[in-house]
Length: 152
Image (cartoon, rainbow, N blue to C red):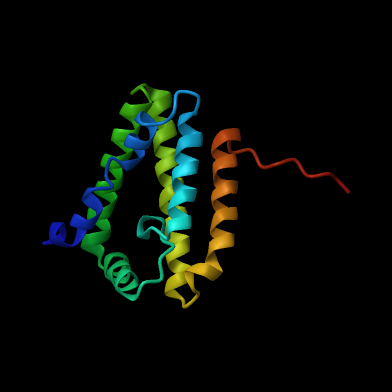
């Protein structure tokens, strides 16, 4: 029965991999994924969590509030991660990158949903969601070291 609820995610399971394999020759995988996520925010795509349509909010509330659905969602994300790793090349560094990228996309979407579910409009959340996505993709590109701050 969980599959009946999660069928909406089935089309998105290999979305990150499709973005990478379908990118322009001069575009890096990370740039393609960043562009795709920002485009999704602009469209208020429910996958980004930035959608305040009542039916979408109710669906996500059901999803995140049901332990068996959350477990199934983690399995879906694992398959999404594996597909992305294959699209990146399949090596260990590709699997590590895919894990980090999928985690970032999950956390960004969850934060956007948390804010809209708390009553903020998608339009109000949009600028902060774009800023968070930009920061997240910079961190993916540069690594986990925090930016150096001047002493003083």
